[in-house]
Figure 1 (cartoon, rainbow, N blue to C red):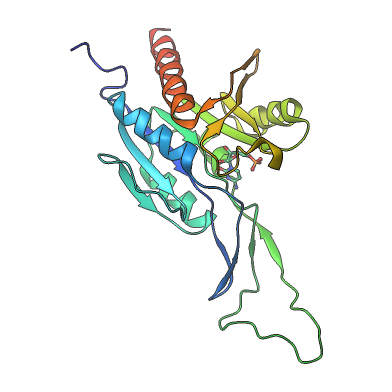
Figure 2: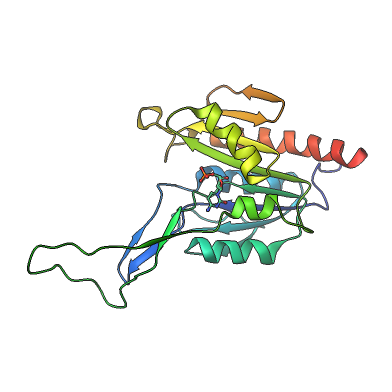
Length: 225
Ligand code: C5P
């Protein structure tokens, strides 16, 4: 057997949505099945890595042989990611909610008799990708973010590279007609500061194994330098 490309490496992956409570029975969240992140965790494991998968609430079985840390909110996800560092590669595939509700109800909020609506107040969540990408002493050698967009895909993705301090952005069009959201296939573009590479439509498993192979090569190169 030839040695596995990620043997001895630690790969940290976030996946799934976060749930931000409104009251004990309600929450806000992004749509995310977690399928692409879980497929990446499986592919990284198969490449020989030690894998930590920090996962929001999803309906998927965790891959065997992967350390899974289950979280609900973005703030919990950030704490779990922080505790899991250092890592050689970080892949931020989670669909993190941008905000949490600051005036959460301690009890289920009741419908108002006068027909008025509860006013929710929001505060911005921590940007976990940015936290990892700009970490002063534990920045992984490769940090990969995702950009799920429904318009201006490449421009929005390129902005995220600098804003979050990540090396690669995996951009995908999640417009409803693509069937990508919640589906089993994905069509991605790899956006780096100096190049854009568009991949064919393929299964999320194939995206995962090819991306892990590309990341293994890039890690080798970065270590040789
Ligand atoms: O800014 P936007 O949510 O579009 O960026 C998407 C990328 O940033 C994804 O890699 C996502 O996992 C990550 N992200 C994060 N923490 C946030 C928001 C996004 O890690 N609060």
